[in-house]
Amino acid sequence: MINIDFYKKVTSEAAEKGAIVVAVSKFQPIEKIKTLYELGHRDFGENYAQELVDKKELLPGDIKWHFIGHLQSNKVKLIAPFIHLIHGVDNFNLFKAINKEAVKNNRVIDILLQVYIAEEETKFGLDEKELIDLLEYYFAQKEQLANIRICGLMGMASFTADTHKINGEMKRVKELFNLVKQTYFIFDDYFKICSMGMSDDYPIALDNGSTHLRIGSKIFGARS
Ligand SMILES: *Cc1c(COP(=O)(O)O)cnc(C)c1O
Image (tube, rainbow, N blue to C red):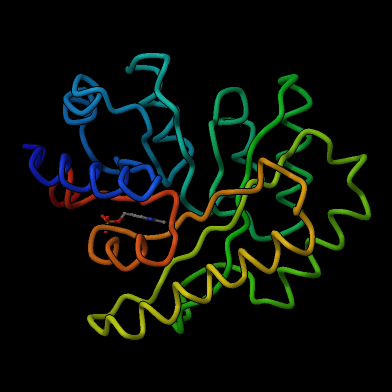
């Protein structure tokens, strides 16, 4: 069963602040995704390329699919024909791989750069220096990367009950967002996405200017 009350609550809280909810449907059955679709929801997020493709084939074509996991270069071709936004890009090889597949599909693919803010070892992403280095590299080769479009940043806070800590980490994402916006994208209307906040920390994310909440378990229930 989908938690419709929570779904309505989180989407309206997000809308009040100009943010949207990406419903994270990884490991969730097709029926639940259909239920949310029938309520009018269109943005869904998945972590695994093959699972995403398998689900896409069974669902309506107007769903906007977000890739939110750690994308391997050799999986880009699976999702390149249709992916709406790739949230977790954190290296130059991935820029090249995404651009190459975007060219093959004659489209531009929107991406977010994943910044590293948590203290946990398992989280992917770029620290500030790596972020700046990657952007410098990107702008130096922009002509060869014309089929990717950097639209913002994505961050994941530590998995902790310490809301003060989570707040500090999310503030940091927003600071990095502002820094990058002002330094590199000041006249670029596409650079406007700040993807942060999950089921347990989304209110803090909204307070810190998130534009895309990635909410899974609190909407769909525990993953199987
Ligand atoms: C699974 C996942 C989510 C959703 O997590 P919930 O706690 O179920 O809301 C959000 N972002 C990423 C990157 C995820 O992997």
